[in-house]
Image (cartoon, rainbow, N blue to C red):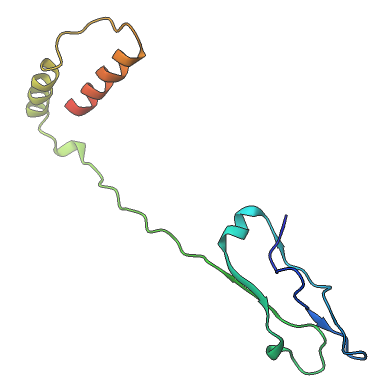
Length: 116
């Protein structure tokens, strides 16, 4: 847990003595702390006949825009043309062979992925 309200910020003024104290705290986990833009008291917003000071916490809730995905309609594909083009692309990679190591496997996988 992390203390979000900075240290030594008074949150209460005793009504009899007028002394400032700090009984109120704001805590959050590390992830939440990254989103906090500010956490401070606002004595001028204190209601009449109250001794506690409001604590204003501003949190950044900006949502990242997602990119839309294209939905493919496989029913509209000319499969004969697709197979012909795919065969031509795969022929450029050479005949099938035994792959000796992971590096050869990854290179072949990239080639097939590009062909598709």
